Picture 1: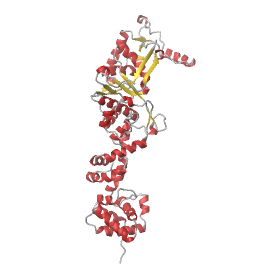
Picture 2 (picture 1 turned 60 degrees about the vertical axis):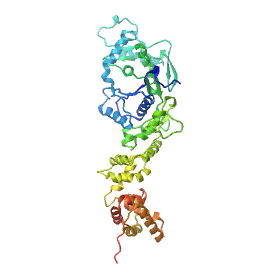
Picture 3 (picture 1 turned 180 degrees about the vertical axis):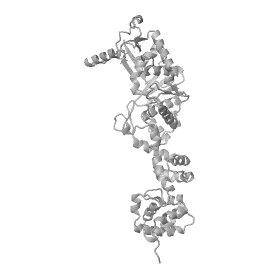
Picture 4 (picture 1 turned 120 degrees about the horizontal axis):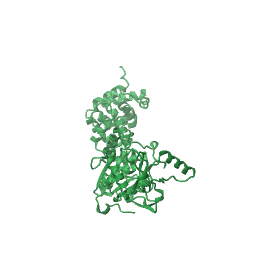
Length: 474
């Protein structure tokens, strides 16, 4: 396999070039990551290009969503992004150069003629290839005023070989490469032309992209050779599939990066780590930091087979990063998901006991709601069922016991309630169950003594009193 080092001593330059016709999808995010890491590993440059030539579908919100997702993942470009549409004149200039040098030609075939030839090829069950009589015609014979497109003169003899860093050596017969359009009849450049010109002008040395673009590479080489430009190094990465091996779709969890952040409640370092491991590996390492990724990343260890997206594995990885995250940072993220303006100091203090149970920020937020609940608490059905008359009577006895506690430390409360459980011949769990329901309105929560200390003496006793059986009159 070819080396992944800089070509001919040139500094490595990579690019990520999304079309802003929707959100930054998960496959695009991985492509951006691989380009960013390759450039960082080689001390090179990573650039962004917005391919906004589809004016009907390219929108400002979509562009901002892409930038937002890249910023969140820490994959900003090293320079301001290039916008492809703004370079249309440059693209047309290159097409004219190809015309002048004889590597392109004006084609006057009408849409009707092309459709008839396509139908004929289908009827004869053969591939349709452009075979225009205008390829070698004298320009003087062109019909005056008739619309035309500019087509590349693709090679017809021999074969084209690409030494791809991922796919290995790939060979295509030149007879399979048709004379594709460079400029439309209205003078606007096609994607195929614009991409090549932009990559050249941006100094891109390595093109790392999905393997669905491999066929495009063979066609784009016609332009590169026609202009006498350096050929970039190609690395066509297999696409991501769902857990069932089918092409990744929304039913597999193929959401926009913003949805992984906002709807699934992921941390960026978790998604970064997970995307890195989709199709690339470093031994048996699963948890890989950003610095380690830069040090270790190479194209040689990108697999040839499609990787499989596994949401459960992603959430497990996210749980690891939540447990490792700074408590104040988590408190800020969780506060944004809660109603009102929660007490950040209390949230931060609660994080060590809350985060051990959560796999995502949404779960973390849901588990912290009890801290800010207003009395009387709304009990969930399971908690309501737990608070039987006997349980409420037990709560009254627990209330009396806790009223005598002045220190209100986790250790002191635990010692007191353990002693009470022994005195009345019950397991500690029998006391903790109704106590948890009264304090949180739920049947699951952090450890009951952590709950008591987080809520504090006054709030804890008030919540218990609200659910305890009233004291019997003497």
